[in-house]
Image 1 (cartoon, rainbow, N blue to C red):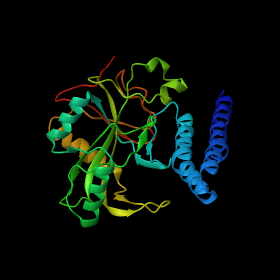
Image 2 (image 1 turned 180 degrees about the horizontal axis):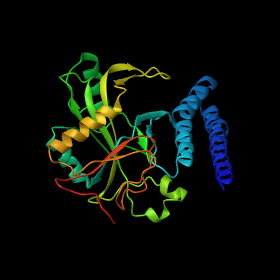
Image 3 (image 1 turned 30 degrees about the vertical axis):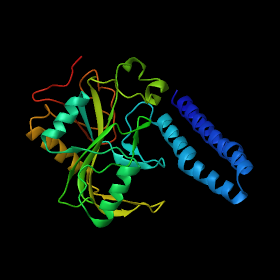
Image 4 (image 1 turned 120 degrees about the vertical axis):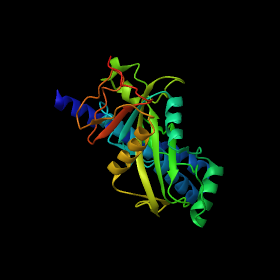
Length: 279
């Protein structure tokens, strides 16, 4: 059975790769070549292939391989591993917002042209921007639903920050099916769900290894940042008891018991004295 599953996974990944190449060579290039001079057609084909089609293909391939578990890492837009998943808070979106407001963290602005330009200026001139936007990372096939941050001093280059993805668990009966893990639906408003988080601490700025884009440098000890975030929430009575989940353990509660990770994940219910569901 294991060999069959592995074979099917390889076939699926090969198919994703083949379709991607076909799209790049026989669709994108043919269209660009018909509309643009050859040099611009090649440039447009490269840009669409490298920044749109191939990153999506990589994310789809990883979802096939990680179908029955929560990935240990989020993914960047290029499909490469990014910030690790290290905490889960269970509750509604309003409860999540209230919890971080109680410890003085602010919600990040949405990433758009205006906020990106403001962030670039604050980054370059080292001016404060407390609600600076986050770059988009991917989990469950979509970018983060919400993010919170706390500046370190007045510099926009240093901050505590965490991204969250809500995960509806109404379809837990289908957890063994590919459709469950490929579902990119956002939880409905007011639903009490697990908010899967990736918390890290920015320490300065650097360059990405492949594209040489300017980005934040991140402290490598994400366990320390996870403990810091959960400690602040606990001290503010914003969460209940914290459960530390090791690799392969099942989290108590009907809503989150299918989460499996390769590293430790801190799990807690939102609200003073709240408890994880036990159904």
